[in-house]
Length: 160
Image (cartoon, rainbow, N blue to C red; front, side, top):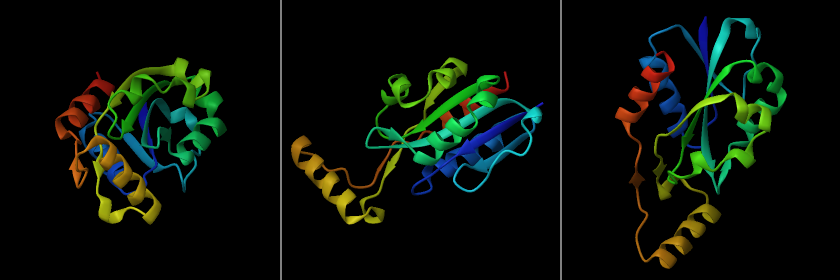
């Protein structure tokens, strides 16, 4: 059997993390972008790693759409949910963001960190971050909390 890795990404961080997971799996795996691809045949996959960025407390809409469209197939497999964001608590509090059948199939959750680079944000996103910086009285310029070690250890746990 094989592992399917499904991801969506806004600025590339989640995509890079998904590929790093694939590189460190010790079994066959297939990777796909949920925004542009579909699963042809589910019979090859017994495990699915779902990697989503979190923006304003919500998973990527392409991930939510993928889950809703493939819920029956996902519910029959072991699901590994990966969150790429700056809020390490989101991964343990996200159940309301997904269908119950999906959450019941999740065997492991992993927060791997996130990156905030204000220079790539849209004007409204940058404004929101600046408002947050004022409230917190701190700079959020070029924050990077992604842990390569966490990604590697997570990949190894998928194949354990």
